[in-house]
Length: 302
Image 1 (cartoon, helix red, strand yellow):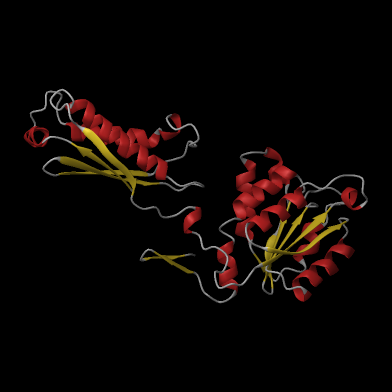
Image 2 (tube, helix red, strand yellow):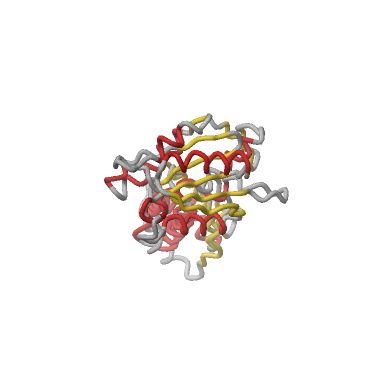
């Protein structure tokens, strides 16, 4: 929700209400302009991404010497639409300005304000704010890295991202992609260290030494197929080979386990998808249920 306020003369208000402006009704034109602006914000603001806009609503309120423009924009996408709403409100104000400037030399766009925003990263629950620090572990599964023949990049990236997100990194481990080594290591990390999140990287393909999914499936008590579906869907748009990934995700007791491919790009995609949405799972594991309440709205996750 965004709002623009255009300061005008009382005579301009009278002519708009009376339909006597030389260029016609500016409100109808401004509404169309706002809708077009919301849909084309990425062409106006360089760092905005193209996205599918599902709804644009525009309302006008005419007072004695000002016009208040309120714009609501809705979308289902990986980023918020506050810039679309702000741009739409701005363009609506400019459209009215353009159509009334011939009779009002003192018009002024007084303010453009973001009124509210729901959805997106800011609406997801962060890690617990009760002083409890979530614990995480990263396991790199690669024969070549374990043998010292190649450098790890994905594991270090994941570890760095976890630290930035406030996790305590309890363990960082490099192992060959051997089920006999993976299974006891994962059991120890989940059962003894009791970390909240375990992320593995590597060994998720279809090669003869890609054993990670097979090892983890026997340890996972509750599968989280939606997690890997979301990661694969996101990655597929960037790398067509992502469909060959056999990554798995699930829960063992109160540890969330997620396996990511071994490439740096795949790890970056995976972490982008996981956060911040995965934070809600930690609360669910503590028995806090599915409802997410914010700003008087109760969203039931199904």
